[in-house]
Image (cartoon, rainbow over all chains, first blue to last red):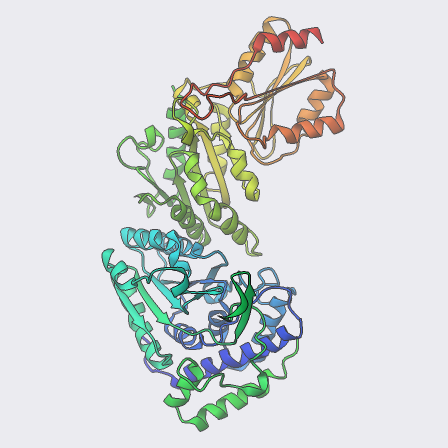
Amino acid sequence: MKSKFDRRRVAQTVLWLRLSQMVINEAYKSGMFKVPIHLAFGHEAMAAALAYALRPEDKVLLTHRNIAYNLARAYRPRYVSAILRSFLHEYMLRPTGLARGRCGSMNLTHPSVGIMYTSSILGNQFSVACGVALGKQVRGEKGVVVVMGGDGSIEEGAFYESLLFAKSVKLPILFLIENNEWSMHTHITERRTPIALGPLCASLAIPFVSLAGNNVFLYCEKLVAMRKKVQQLGMPLCVEVAVKTLGDWYDYKNPQHPKGKWVKYHVGASPSVSLSAWPLLQQHADDPVFVLSKLLPLSTIQKEAAALFNRLQRVTP
Amino acid sequence: MTLLSFLNQVIRRETTKKKVIVFGQNVAAGSYLGGLTSDLRVGSGGRIINTINAENTLVGVGFGAALTGAHAIFFMRQIDFLLLTTDHLVNTYQSIRGKSERMTGSFTIVSTVIDHGYEGPQSSLNNLADFCSLAHVPGFSITNKVDTESIIPRYLTLPGFRIVVASTRMLRGNLIEPARVSYVNSDGTLFQYDDGKDVTVVCFNFSLPQGMTLCDILRRRNVAPSLFNVNAMTPIAWKRILASVRRTKKLVVLDDSKSENRSCFSLLAEVEAHASLDKRIVVTRRLGREWLTPNPDQFEVPYQKVAHELLGA
């Protein structure tokens, strides 16, 4: 376990995720990208906490909405401008991009910081994570594997199969499920019966943890403890975190809803998010930056955010 | 000796050499997949895992293990189960192979085509090439002693991904030991077993036994055949076969696949474009009314008719 809880570094990571996404969103609005990008405003707390909790030997597998985790794992305070530029270039498919312009957004990997694989196919990543954990085990490598998915991906049979395989073969995997309640344009209540992950995991004798509230410091403590448990037991563990994807609600018209239906942001530039409004998006606990402002002195956050903002807003592709 | 015993022997020799992960349902239990995985051993630190019944996940596991640099071999009872895994065969494979970093690990699926008959409609799929064409997946058929000795040692743990398949009909039969090998391409995926000047016979999928029988009949009639077996499932360089066809001017293609998208079509298109023929005979499966009910599942070649047509040309 890390000896000192670096609250400032964790807070900086949250702000980095928020502000860098805001810059990317502005570039997106200007029509700079051809690849679809699933922004993750509102996902910053868990992404920052995971980056804090993981060790260099750990491996991470992500989904199409990977931007927060990728930015968090790439974060180096001294090089924020260069890092942001590498993401912009990747989304522009330039050879100077993070993955030499070969991945774009939905399949963006960053092997040097442990991000081995990302999948735009729901549930696909869970079994690949099992293989990564098995491969590491056979090769005698240390570390755990973290695989992220959303509430939509746990509807796939691959999720159950992978939990079963991981438990049966005794693989140190942390299944991290972000529940934002939406799968594209349908809310959970519109598409399925509730899934009680706790009892599901219990049926396989897999420990389960539920998190909510966007308290990044609490998430850090919990994830460090979970990582330790996964490694010590050599067994999988599942954590579900409640998250609200911020950015936009918009009126979606289709034959079923000719007068329109309010749906959550899913993909693309968010027109309602403006760089000038930094760093808060909501005065509500759904916004991790708002929660951060209750955990640290507001002046500290404003100072950190201003310094970062000054550097990032000058970044041009 | 059967092909099954020989294939098991060669695989066993290879898995012992390296720290591999051998996995699949019943790989180390019961009948050992009909004997295919009997008595397998792995190099120090490797693992043999009797897995759960979850083909889709197991293929994802293989890709994940290969990503770490490990060598994974998944033994799957029959290729019909591969249908459950097409997401990984296409999307995961495409995602991994598109990376600029070279893949150091390997993942090989070893499976069988169930073609010994009377299995019923859900085990009627016999064309590995259909899976391979989805994402340009390297795929190899195993049919005899020579190609087993060439393909298994070379590809079983070679970095990258591939599918290797044998047919149950041939696995249960006596091991075919070709008397001559005139040519093997650099990939070990095209084999020439005879280099006659009169007619070119090319076998696809699992039709080599029929091709050998036809060649025997032709030789008895003083016709010298060139016999090829195409063990690759995705298009390969046809140069050697084209050279033979230009010389013989007579081509017989045998393909026992039930697919509408047969590998032999690629060769036929090349021949059409680059060679002029006096005779072209293509023998493929005729799927009658019994196709989707339990049936003998035989690929019947009208040998005498083919020979007669060739001699009359």
